[in-house]
Image (cartoon, rainbow, N blue to C red; front, side, top):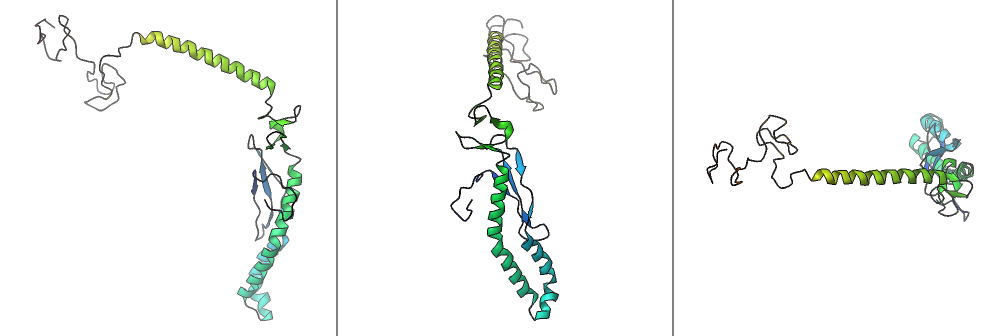
Length: 223
């Protein structure tokens, strides 16, 4: 943010300009955010008198300026030009005041230079909680990670054991050919009851048996 001089301007990348140049709500206000948790703080509203007056004068331009022999359009141009000329310097001054106030609500980390709120500040270390995390919180988080990791490993082992009973060789219909419902590998369609299991095998030669066969077509063994 260019302030018009060489003085340093903080909060250059974590503020939002809420200022309005014209109208009854003309004024300066800025919203600053914590660069860790994104909580915000807004500076007190600073009215922009020229912008407020311009809103009233612009409406009265057709009468007040008409007495002087000037058209409303000419008056509006003159008013807007005055407001625009004063806007930049006034806004920069207001921004500097807002920064001075914001400095009391945020801390600047000496390591990463981020501006953070009090909740994200490690006062004992003089650093933000990103650079100097709270020890108790880190211990609790590490304990939970250890619990989750070991529990996941145990669950994986249980899954490996159960996997031994899963048929991974036989083909399965994942979509019912009758009603197009998803079957999730079941023997019968959950939507219409259509049989989906792989065809039976002959007990004599292990050949695949057609659904309606009473005897194996390869060896004659009764189904």
